[in-house]
Length: 265
Image (cartoon, rainbow, N blue to C red; front, side, top):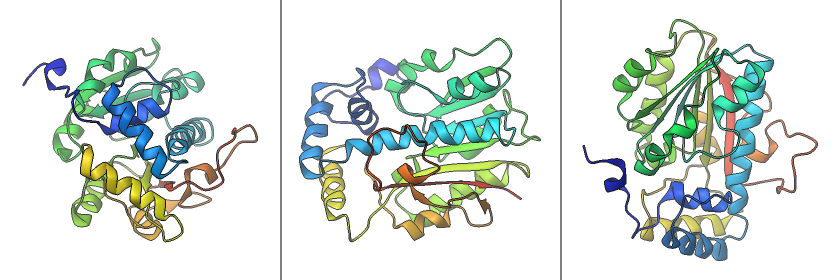
């Protein structure tokens, strides 16, 4: 397999790097900045999705650790490291927490050392792998996580890259089927909605110019990912509406990135 640096294509905008640009990071290139700026002209609020999704992750992890006693996380589609990564939030509350990150973006791999700064009591690991390779992911995760005990499966903005519905739902189901009772699914997904036509225009531009292609789904379609699980309140809602905190900043009340957390009975 080529070295990570050799797999990084700087001539075409890439989702993870644009996301990083919108979050104020430095791990992006002029081509990503230009695409990100153009997308913002089509949908001025789209940069808020990245912030809302990131803040949702923090709230969800804190709830799982502090209120539900979860100490293990399998975070697939990790994205570029930024402030308050999953292990930082979890280990701040419970230093013994163990986290396995999975991503197949070579730029994320190149920066993976930032995801491996575990507390002495806990552990972190990183796997360069595609979401579709479920068996490989589970085999590797078992080296760090005890899969006989509850695990939080984190899938933020990653199943949007699986175009076929049957495959997307099937992948999530296979992962959750491999985890024991008491495990949780944390998932977010870009939506399409008649009230947000500018979102569709922004995604269409992206799919013509960037990589990888994105698939939008309706809020009802997103809810299907949680079939058979017990949804925590308030259900599947805009990331900005999932248990917002008083000091949540100036995010809009509704963004076209929906999310939810559910427990496996």
